[in-house]
Amino acid sequence: MKANAFPIALGIIALAACTQPQPKPGFAAALPAPPPAPKVADGAIFDMAGGYAPLYTGHRAHAVGDPVTIVLTESMSTSKSAGSKSGRTGSIGVTPPVTGPLSFINPSSLNASGTTSFKGDGSANQSSTLAGEVSVTIVEVRSNGTALVRGEKRLLLSQGEEWVQVTGIVRLSDIDADNRIASSRVADARIEYSGNGAVGRASREGWLSKFFSAVSPF
Image 1 (cartoon, rainbow, N blue to C red):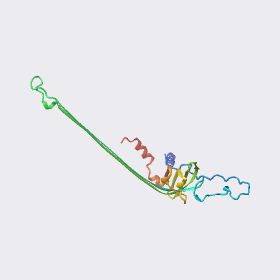
Image 2: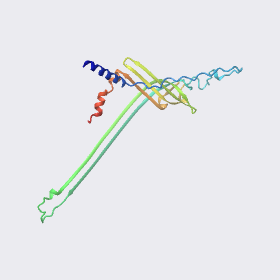
Image 3: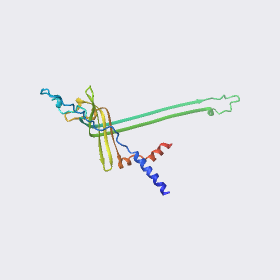
């Protein structure tokens, strides 16, 4: 029986390992375009192929493969509340005749009334903050003065791995002289901060507990 229990335990361990989050692919650094073929010397003094940079841009990132530092300044806070209250009251009464075959009926026995009420309240609050810096590269330069940036930072720690993945669209004129831009100025931003390891695994609900929570009627 012990021999049969070992493969089961090994399968449970493998299943738990597979549920660990992993970094999404496709965030590798973009490489710059290959340099153009050398021109045949034509006697001109000025040659843009030699790495020309105008004075007003200098070394500011503007081409595919150039690094840009995204300063993460994300802070979100949401609050929502809802309430509902209703009530209804009704009554009915019949007075029997004082003479005749129905005179024996007690007047109070033909009176009825009913009351219903409902009151419900709900509220939800959530806040999140993300601060730091991550350097990405320009993947695509567009004709309207914007660029698609994408990149990631991975940290291999003693208790697991952590990563930050960022992608979005930036305006080249918003990049400062130090090639930095705030995350609040990144359009269509996708920012993911996650990790795995012993600490992350301990902070998540186990798969068996998730199963019983899903099938529990309470």
